[in-house]
Amino acid sequence: MMEYKNIKKNGGSVQLWVALSVVLIIVAGGFVYSYVKITALDKQVLSLSENLASTTATLYGTAGSLSNAQNEIASAKSNIDEVKDKVGGVEQTVGSISGTVSTLQKLSTIDPELLKKYSKVYFLNENYTPAHLKIIPQEYVYSNTVQEQFLEEAWPFLQNLLTAAKADNVAIYVKSGFRSFAEQKKVKSEFTVVYGAGTANSFSADQGYSEHQLGTAVDFITGGFGGELTEDFDTTAAFKWLKDNAYKFGFELSYPEKNAYYTYEPWHWRFVGVKLSTYLHTRGINFYDLDQRDIDTYLVNLLD
Image (cartoon, rainbow, N blue to C red; front, side):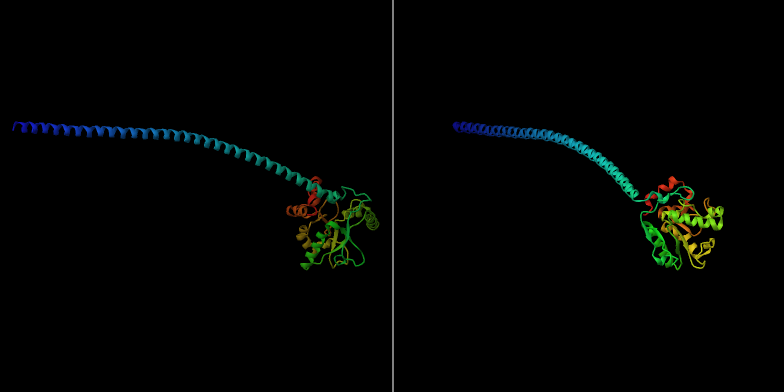
C-alpha cells in the first residue's frame, strides 16, 4: 500500500515535471519563433530601408537630370529664338534689298523727264523725243485727216479713259497729242503772228517747254465747237466727266483757272500716273503746286 502511494506520488511528480517541460519547451519555442520572426522582419526592414535609400538617391539623380534637361531645353529654345531673330533680320534685310533692286529696275525703264514741271520751268531740248510713240487709233481722234501720237507705255491708260467715257455716253476725242520741238516752234510762231507775242505767250508754250513734247499730254475736244479749243469746253458734259473721272486713269488738268503759267485751258490734260493723279484729286491741288522733289517720288509708280 505504501509503495503504491509512493508510486502514485512519484508518478504525479513525473507528470508535473513533464508538464513543466512541455510548457518550457513551448515557451522556448515561442521565444525562438518570435526571435526568428523578429529577425526576419528586421532583415525586411533593413532591405526596405536600403531600397528606399537607393530609390531616393535615384530620384535625386533623376531630378537632377530633369533639371539639367530643363536647363538644356531652355538654352536650346533661347538659341532657336536667337537664330529666328537673326533669320528674320536677314529676311527683312533681303526683302529691303530686293525691294530696292525692284524699284531701281523699274526706274531704269521709266523716262525721268515724264514728271518734270516743264511749263516755263524745265526745258526739253530739240533732240528729245519719247522712246516709244503710238499712233492713236482713228476712232479716238477728232480729225479724220491728222494722225495723233501718244506715249506707247501710257496709251492703255488713255484708251481706258476714252472707252469709259464712251460707255457713259460722253463724247470725248483727242484733238492733239505728241508735238515735237519743231512742231511746237511752228505752232508758237503762228500764234505769235495772229495774236502777238504777249498774248501768244499767255496760252502757248515756247518750244522745249511744252508738255506735248513729252508725249503724255493731250488736248481733249467734244462736238459742237467746230473743232476749236475754247474755254467753253468747261460747260460740256465731256469736261464734267473728265473732272470727275480722269484722275482714275492717271490724268490731271495742267492749267486750271488762276494757275501761274498759262491762261485757263480746260481741254489740256496730262498723264501723271494713277497714284499721283489720285493724290492731287483728293486734296484738290494742282500738279504745279507740288515741289519737284515730291513729284519725283511718284515716278516709280507712273505706269502702275
